[in-house]
Image (cartoon, rainbow, N blue to C red; front, side, top):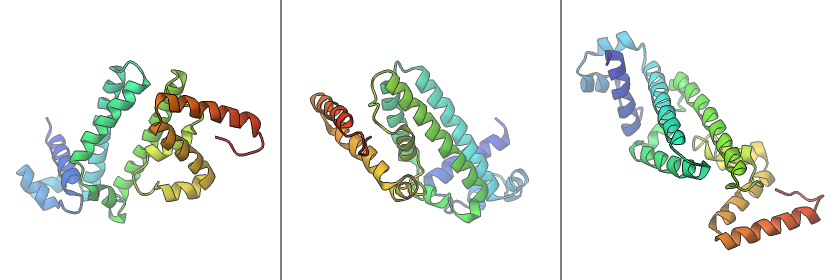
Length: 209
């Protein structure tokens, strides 16, 4: 393992668990047992190092998620596995990391982070389409909107901001359906779907899902 890889792996763990601002280049050099000069010979700034950490974490996550998808029989198994995968990741992630990544000081890292969000949303969209094709996901759900809500970064794409960009009516319709359909028993889901189908047929000029 190269010295650069060791630095990135250690920094990724420290930034994630402690928060970005809580970890200085001095802290990193001490943890790694190298001089601060050596650290700066490999990375010109903390932002550059953070950018490489985000790329490293992204590539690792994509590899693990690809293996997870390949080992699953259908979209429902993927959804459950992905849920537990990210729950375990969240245990190790300091909430301050998500807040600090948007700081102007870390512009390079933020741009990479935002690109990753878009990639994640596209993955969710593809999964929802697969689930619909397999008959597991309700076809009335607004795929693009749900993918945006699930795959957001927790603040920039908050519900308030999504309502502003996508429209309150569209957001309400999707959230309302997902919330109540998700609580329903199989009997309740069948009844909801029956009523939605009936409503859509008799209210052609009224906003429907």
